[in-house]
Each structure stands twice: as structure tokens, then as C-alpha cells.
Length: 531
Image 1: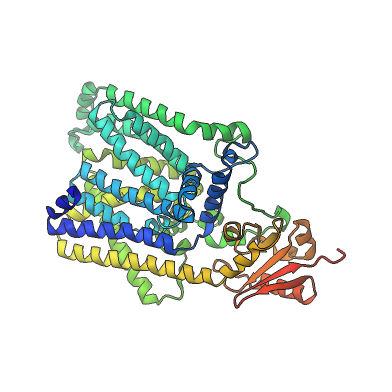
Image 2 (image 1 turned 180 degrees about the vertical axis):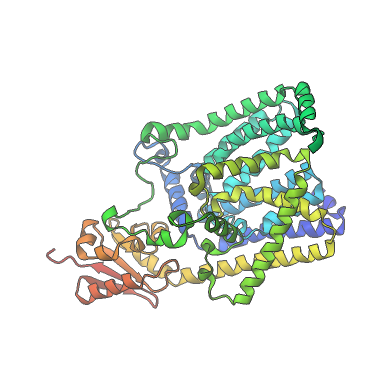
């Protein structure tokens, strides 16, 4: 009742913005249940289900795994609600990210700018998609913005109240994905910038040196901030260190240096492997990539172009793509304008501390982080805060609100269309996955649908796209104990026609025996004969 009363008291603009934000949150949940389980989400959900059945896998000395928060929450949710529980995780953390973007916007600016910021993060296509799929990215993003919000509140109050909560949040963020570790250098950056802010007061070009000298005399170490920062860091490290220490002690690398996997998976040796798929798709894997390639890829994937490649959406009319790109450029200009305006405001310390920390991390780690926009998703709420602030500062409100309406419609429609396309794509081979599930438990399948074979068929896959054409023969299949081969014409990410030609030839020669087929997929059993 209180929430309804607060809503009715808002002005018409605030009401419209609130409705828009709620729509974007509901959209994430709707898409989460409409999407089939794809890509990395297949492995994550499979591991969560295995951990639910056997929690001791988390401490098995021969098993390595990514930061485990998603698996632990997933195991609990699967025990409680089955697959529905697994699909609830990503949109829930997506909603948390939107909510705390709003809260931080209200804290730093006012409610209107907070709502605008929440709407802006809500319309970012990559945030919609990653909040609808079972990846770790919406989790680390939601926890990151929540952590920054409570951290800023705690240190601003100069009180020890809330230190434990913030410390636990820091540790959980570091356990949600490797990029969550950025919370610890952020604390250092926040402290450094808080020392620098007083030095900048009253600076002008003509009196820079005298003013700096005067400010240096008056500077004081904020002991409350220092104490709280150290306590928060210590608590956070206590929470997350068991996982990272385990990796270091077992595998010699805190960032998961080895070990077996919970999910069944296989890979080819270097002598028979081709990395053509990676080289085709991601700038990080192409030696010839320039900074322009990385920036373009990050920009396009941020705004929902799959893998930053226009050829993946070639079926869409060019004028639609150009119109959408024009819309993203206008939205990006709003973000840029807000960043320029916010630079003048001392109260925006948490935003700049977070962004500068990420800039330094990108400069140091480069290819590890510049992998499209997915690994950069934790900066999305802060870009949205820039946008919310910049939008409210513009003087062309009517045009601006029209732009927002178009953005909500355009970005939502693009992601609904993407979900429909993904579902249609999945339907073309989903029945083949059900057949694979009926095979013997020790079956090993050469397939382009590796991750989905793990989740839906519960069989060990070998990557068809990763097998070098020159090594595609019966001897190689026997070397890796492959029992079945999947042939399809519908694989999206790479041209497999050359692989299919070899499969057809091996079938003609009797080395492969057709055991199942549909309109789009054929499954062969390998016949080794006397080999």
C-alpha cells in the first residue's frame, strides 16, 4: 500500500519513468522463460544441478570451476523449483542492478535522475540479454552496483554501521565472477580520489601552484574512511579467499589454473585443432586486431549486435539496422554529455572511482576484458548514471522524451526479436538433443552444439567446429573415442559446409552409419570396423 501511495504522489513524468522501468524488469523475466538454455548457461546450469545432487563436488580436489556463487545459488534454486528456479537467477540480479542504479542515482542526484538512470540501464540490449540468460554477468553487475551503493552510504556516514554488510557484499561480488574482484581496487581508488578532491578545490589555470600548496597544508587523512575501507576489504577477502586460496593450493593459480570439470566436456589436441571459429568471431583472438576493432566490437555488442558482427543479422533490412545504429549513437551522446557534466560534481566520487578503476583494469588486462561488452557489463549501470544525469540537464526535453520512448520500443523489440530467433533456431535441432540423451552414458558426440549437448543430452561433446579438416578422419575419431557424429545445416557461428562434406563422404564409405535424422539434423554412429 505504501508503494502504491508513493506512486500516486509522483508527477506524470516520474510515473511514466517508473512504469517504463517496471516494464523493462518484467521483460527480463519474460525473456528468461522464453529463451532456451544456450551457450555457457548450459554448463553453468548443468554444474548447478550436479552440485545440488552432490555438494561435495565443491571440495573435490581434482575439480576446478569458475567462481561458485552462481552454482551455489543455482543448486539451491534447482532443489527448490527445478529448472524454473535456475531461470529466475539472471533476471533477478538484472532487476537488482536496475534497482540499485535507481537508488544510487537518488542518493547522488535526485529521484528523477535515478529513474532516468534505471531506465537507461534497463534499455541497454546487452543488459537485457545477459539478464535473461543464465550467465554470471547479470549477477556480478547487480552485486557490483549494490556494493558501490552501500559502500558509498557507509563511508559517507563515517560510521562503522553497515561495514559487515558491505564487506560481505564485496566478497560475494568477487565470488560471482572473476571481474568481481575489481571491488577491491575500487576501494583503493575511492580512497585516493577522496584525498585528491580537496586538492582540486579552487584551482584555476593562473593560480594552480599557489592553490595546490595552500590545499596541501590543509589536507587531512580521513581516518574514518581509511578504517572503514580496511575493515570492508578484510571482511570481503575473508568471504572470497577460500575459493581463491583453494585454486592456488590445488592448481598453482588463484584464478582456476586447472583440474577436471564438473560438466562432461572434451577438446582436441593441438595437432588436430583449428581455432578458426574464435579467429572469425572475436577481436581478442585475432593477432591483427587494432584498438578500433576492440572498441567497435565492444560498442556493437553493448547495443545488441551479436559478437559485433553485422553478418549475424544480415536477414534484417539494412535501413532497420541503420536506424537502430542511429538511435544508439544518440543514446551514446547522452551518456557522453552526462559524463562531461558530472565531471564538475564532487559528489559523483563513487561513479568516477568505479569508472577509473575499470579503465586501469582494461589497460592492464586488455584482451582478458575486451571480449565484446559482456565482461564490461559491470560498467553499464554507471554509464546509465551518466546518461540519466546528462538527459536531465538537456534543454530539449520533448525531443528527449520522444528519444526515450523510441529507445524503449527499439531496444525491447530488438531483444524480443533476438529471443524469437534463438527459440526458432533451437527448435530446428532440439529433438536431436533428446535423441542423444537416449544414447549410452559413455557416448562421446562430435557436434557443433557442444554446450547444449551437455545440458539437454547429458553426454560428453567434442567440438566439430574445432576439428581441423585435414585431421577429420576415422583415425582421429578413434583416438578420441568418438561414438557419434552430428551433421547440421543450421549452425549459426561458422560455415561448416567443409566439415559436412567430409561427414557425407565418410557416410558414403560406410564409416558412419545413419541412426537418426530430422529435417535439419542427421546423427551418425561411427563404424570402426576392423580399425
